View 1: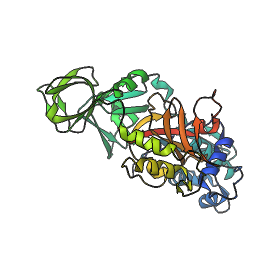
View 2 (view 1 turned 90 degrees about the vertical axis):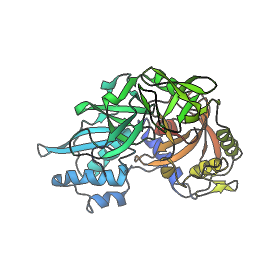
View 3 (view 1 turned 120 degrees about the horizontal axis):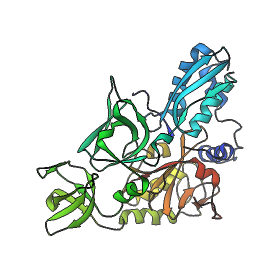
View 4 (view 1 turned 120 degrees about the vertical axis):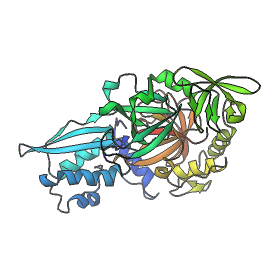
Length: 394
């Protein structure tokens, strides 16, 4: 498993998010009270049975924290180092994407007796990136590594035209990025065209072309599987816009053209989900007799022919990444939404309906909730806990 790449979110109200987290991850009756802490005693005692932290074990605590809380370094950007200074305080350096992980790590250290924590973790995406926190792969393919230099392994291979969310600039001419499906990796800056959010979203909207076989026109190579923006067509070819701004012509026989305004399967899934609106919340449920959050999503998309895993943290691996907590302009109707528990784990999912509205299974019943603070159905805690969105049907 790679080192140095770890977890995501920005939390406005930890206590409110913790209340929602408890509601989504504990069986139905009785409704639990909001937890007073982010990490339970049983988990803390796995770090130290007597809850007495030892400075010489700080690096071990961080490794345990990554395994127990952050869990999957492919999905969550988290890299922390700890130093014991002056015999009295812990200094944290590195970076963290989601505030939930920062808060959970600070609580861990404090409850182990390290009362003075000098938190110098950089929040991602890095402020140094400015507005250019988005990228389009401009090379035929770009390898994503677990680290920017030295002994390293390939985490992913990103194709021409794929979108990447930039998190920080690294050494050796690399960026730490979120790849098209959400995986993290270091990609060479020379393989990415940096853009601002509006262009990033615009390139991915509208008619698209998917290459069904390799195509070369003497000047450039377009790989099988590449997804590119369509700008026009003739009787036997389509014109595509490359991330570089250049155009190319691809024979119709070598590609699939999607000119539709939306996938009918997405609307079937949404229609099925809306038929469950008002259904009572039932932990583990999947029917109108009772349904939970991941059961709602699984059942709805099942009617459209997509068989998804059962739980929200498993479903989060599916599809193409379309939005992050800090960039929601790419959200589209039918995207699946993922929310973090107060301790930083994925604990809830929902279906985006458009216009800032989403359908979710919560207690007491399936309802439509809003991302807009001015709406009566707005949930500030849910808004703050939103992590990212994926598109299953494209």
